[in-house]
Length: 267
Image 1 (tube, helix red, strand yellow):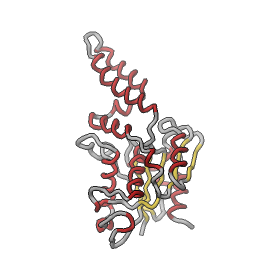
Image 2 (cartoon, helix red, strand yellow):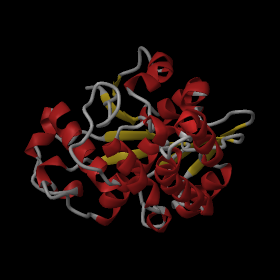
Image 3 (tube, rainbow, N blue to C red):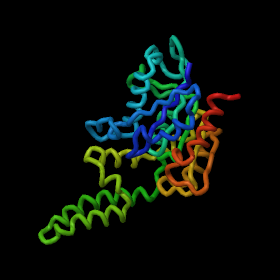
Image 4 (cartoon, rainbow, N blue to C red):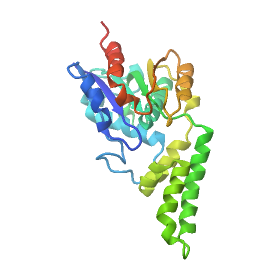
């Protein structure tokens, strides 16, 4: 039986984000599942703005439908009556890491999903430049999103409409909200919702073996976040990489694969 590794991509990414990791783990008895999260890749956007919990619910249901053996689950944790229990190894990058943290927290506290048939059983957590810790810079971001709306009104005034394209680009660059600019309305509101949630208080309650991978030159999720997660997730291991920015899951796929291999397939 193959081991199951579920990989969740970051905001604006897709299942293709894990191409390098697939290559690095080729030939191993590990089945890698990489869903396109709702609103990205080939997966349609949600009907309404989503929260981190909404994404976590969706991932649990997606995993259940992909692994038929989990359909027989009747409760959460190791207490389920199952024909066969299959361990799930969960990896998340950036926004996917935020979702992975929420799923790990739910399992650690045995918080039930509204649909008990869709609970996941995570035996190991891998975080690659995971989002989820809120900083003062998020206030700047929210202000920027607000300004982007009022700015449109201002630039729509007579005589200023010709400046609108340039004005928008300067504004988005100033507050670093390019992903907001490119998103459709429902995803813009989703981005605000997920960015507003601070998952740091959850870290101390995560009791799942965890490996953390981070580039020291990451400017999207700062390296200080890695230190916080290492300190507050009990027993976690931190792997750092000099000269690497936010795409640690791609730029250091071979090294990450070595760690995953050692955890899943111990010698």
